[in-house]
Image (cartoon, helix red, strand yellow):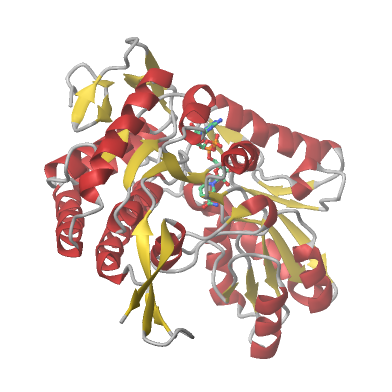
Amino acid sequence: MDTTTKTLQHYIGGNWVHAKDGATLDVFNPLDDSLYLRAAKGSRQDVQSAVAEAKTAFADYRETLPKERERWLLRIAEIMEERKAELLDCLIDEIGSPIQKAMFEFEKGLTMIRAAAGLCRNVRGETIPSDAPGKFSMSVREPLGVVAVITPFNVPLIKTTRLVANALAVGNTVVHLPSEMAPHLTLLFAQIVADAGMPAGVYNVVTGYGHEIGDDLTSHKDVKFVTFTGSTVVGQHISEICAKNKTPNTLELGGKSPTVVLADADLDKAMPLAARSIFMFGGQACIGTSRFYVERPIYDEFVKRFAMIASKIGMGDLRDPNTVIAPIISDRQRQRIKDHIEDAKAKGATVVTGGEWDGNRCQPTLLTDVSEDMTVCRTETFGPVTSIYPIDSYEQGLAMANDTEYGLSSAIFTKNIDTAFHFARNINAGMCHINGPTIHDEAHVPFGGNGESGVGREGTDADMEAMTELKWITVQL
Ligand code: NAD
């Protein structure tokens, strides 16, 4: 890869190539908006070339043995460990991850790859009893072909490792469009894939602006599956394209995740987890808790303790392990957060703590007295901002938690196991954590949401089912 000039190239068909028209895009360090590097700005031609390479490679790759794919994936994990420092630096300087979050993402990424390696041997169909005498009947799972992977800026390593590795594990080839704000991380990963010996054309990366070339990828007739993680508005657009072309897809979108805290909760344990639920990476997490519903007997105590924790959260050097609050990625996202806070203040919300900015970082912000007419009440903020509402009963908490168009993660803190399970079964969300933070993810779980938060689940088993198709085969004996 051409790193000396800091102009990154696409990775297509096993080669590092400039954009066909030579165009580049600038990537900025979100901490101070300085130029971080330049990357190829892809066009339709680049997308077509990547899909063509992936399609050609699929013919041989689909015939590879599980043990070969397993070996490549395990080698990728080994090389990731060797290049840990480089990957961490990139997560810090390209997207502004504090080292604590970068480490979390790196470790999670490793488990994603290793879990995918285990998936190679588990692409299974079944034998099926037949009503026809002497007929042996079975189903087999087959890879789909070229998979389009589209990833967001905030957890580029987790999403890349999980979705790319799962697609490759089950025998598909991939064309990856990373966020225009995080191309370097993905291209470092592409170098690792190449060095692990993965055949040329199996994994391809085209960098560029999604709003310019995304449609060329998702509507391509040779793309057989689309997996998208990003905002709800882009997800809706992709869903419409996929519906028209009958391209199966999974969509992992935005959230407005609730946490309910009942009067019997162990606040000593719950408080640090509540803080982690929203402030990690400066609130730029789809599964962050942006709504807390707290029972009245402990409401004042909860707000007081939360404010104390929030005011002490680390906002220092990104390489300091105590730093939690990250710079907000772009001007557009910063403006959205400012708008949400200003709108809430203007309409009567109380800013218990925070609300101010330190450079590109928003202070951890707690809002109370939030009402339905405020934007922050129902819309994803994607910053270190959360609202705390008092509730008079568990039933009211459940009803308010369910009063949303989203349905991603959720949590409840209580010692009552019956109530906890009632909540888990009745909350309209793809995920629920009892006495744990809404921010939690593992390689082999069904991760995803409902409604405006998306369609389908990801994770080893879910991706295996989504990224393969069943074929029924019979043998007349
Ligand atoms: P975004 O929607 O702006 O961009 C995501 C990706 O979509 C980028 O790669 C972008 O280039 C691409 N894109 C843009 N237009 C496209 C088009 N027309 N066709 C195809 N691709 C296109 O999102 P973002 O700002 O990078 O990420 C933040 C959002 O992602 C938040 O809403 C967050 O909740 C969500 N998110 C969800 C999950 C999840 O698992 N549910 C995880 C992380 C982030």
